[in-house]
Image 1 (cartoon, rainbow, N blue to C red):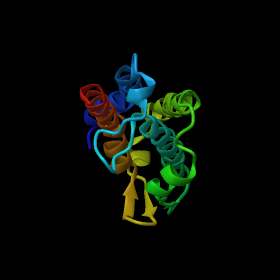
Image 2: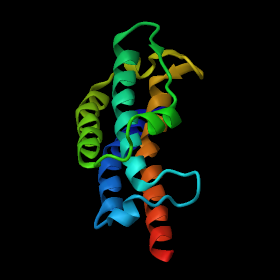
Image 3: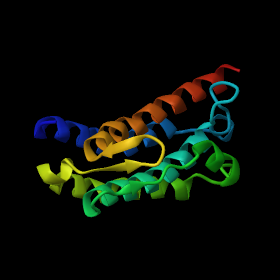
Image 4: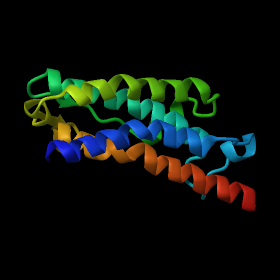
Length: 158
């Protein structure tokens, strides 16, 4: 991946937090706790997932850059949602999500071509690269912001 493409994805990654906060603007308690469909996460659960995911992802990119042959441990996001009290207030999780992104962006902007070529092994998916990390996480928050918007629309139409 060339540096211009990487920079575009880094910009999208940086904008993910703002996109989620825009999706949450003016949200009511009813909207916060209403999923878009049965079996889906509510916006409240999505915010907690984003915090947990972002904490893990911030560590993962650091492991890829700083450790040779990094082993990236997977986790069960559904079990996290069931066992980590995803019914709690969202403000601390939103802050953690934003802070993890804010401290990771400067790292991404300074990474060299050699560091972008870093790779390790993910416990569930096999080879895991720094570029693959960026491609996934650049869109992750945006996808969940869209999920929050869809859930809010469903909550107000019921």
